[in-house]
Amino acid sequence: MAPATRRNVGQLMTRLLTLCVYPLRLIAVSPIPRGFLPRAPKPKALPGLYPDEDRRLLACTAVPLEYRVLWGFLAREGMRDGEAIGLAGAAERAPQTHRPARRTPRAMHQHR
Image: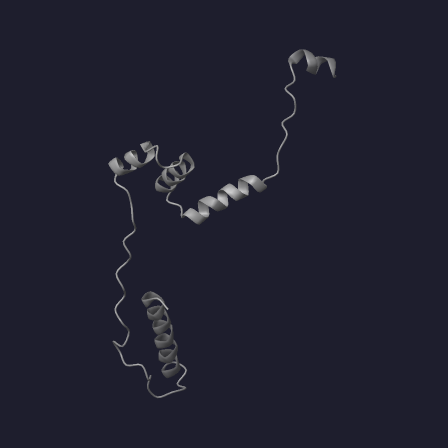
């Protein structure tokens, strides 16, 4: 388990055992001492591109266009790559809607 997950499980167990002591009075003392929980881990640093790096990446012709478009979209929208790929799959699965033919005023008058 990740350190944050272990801490969350520890918090839950501490809270549950504290409730067993009071108000439920099922046990006399909690087996988990105060201050037992490990410190919360520092948040992970998320990788990001500086504007000049982003500009160079998007202009680099050695990188295929579809990757440049994807990375530019991800950097601007804040999505994970799996979410963006899911959007592409949803767009392919979406039903095609057909727009009715545009009717001119003369054609509308004739159909009345």
